[in-house]
Length: 349
Image 1 (cartoon, helix red, strand yellow):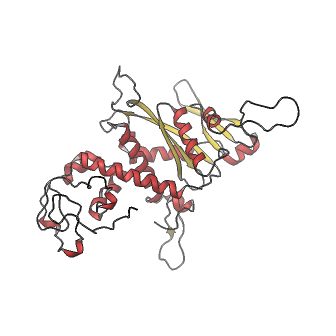
Image 2 (image 1 turned 180 degrees about the vertical axis):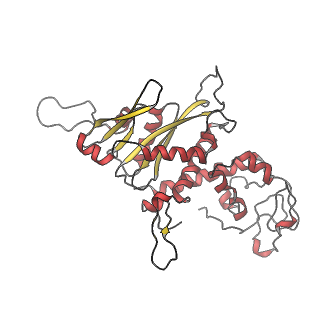
Image 3 (image 1 turned 120 degrees about the vertical axis):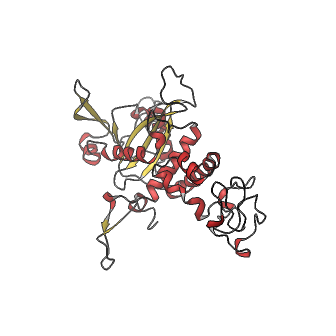
């Protein structure tokens, strides 16, 4: 069974003569001895040439890439720094950095699955935003399965602002289906959580695709065979009304599933939380910004960046709207909280 290596357990660089040996057995090298643009070994007085790579068949967490020095870039990338900028400043190759990001996303996805395995959403908001992959929206570009315009749907818990699920696909309906399949795998195996979204996309069809069931036979007539929505489902659409100039002049609430009074009382009439989360997403993740040179060049890296961004959003960054009064004697007025803390998934970070 693989175990996580603690920072500085052993040298991770194959080019170093002390590769794989515990760091405690050798004197450490000061950072001042490492030349700019070269990989620096933590256990050798001589800077090692070439990028730092994991051993074949072994993840970065098992060979020392979890060292504090290697994890320094992660918050910067989650806060909007470009990989190309970090490569120019620190001297690491972009391919090496992308490998780190890909592996970090794999570990973040595993942590996410464990924390949210049984998480139950009382009420949530669903919305999607689109971005380009492999192009920046040039005219006449041919859409393919791995390039062109992609939609990213995000499901947000209204009470804790936790990003519970995401889906990435060629259209909003397919991305929403991926979201509800994730919710079905976690805390909602039998019925969707109460949901509100905007009027775009076929969210109702996505819910039916994942959750619809055959009604129970009541003992009279022919047994039902057609799948229908459940009795206690709640789904509301907040449809924007615009004038001739395209400006929003109002919002009309349409209840698709459930009692109108109960659904509106529980879910409200807007999707303000998830839309504000999308603004944060565009600030965090440069790949979400349209028609710039920061667009993703590969669909796999677009997905990896989305996973890492959600993990940082849920577990690392505190938000003012989630602050609670600090305990007496702490010297602070407010105690910062992350969405995972507000949701009860963790008690500290």
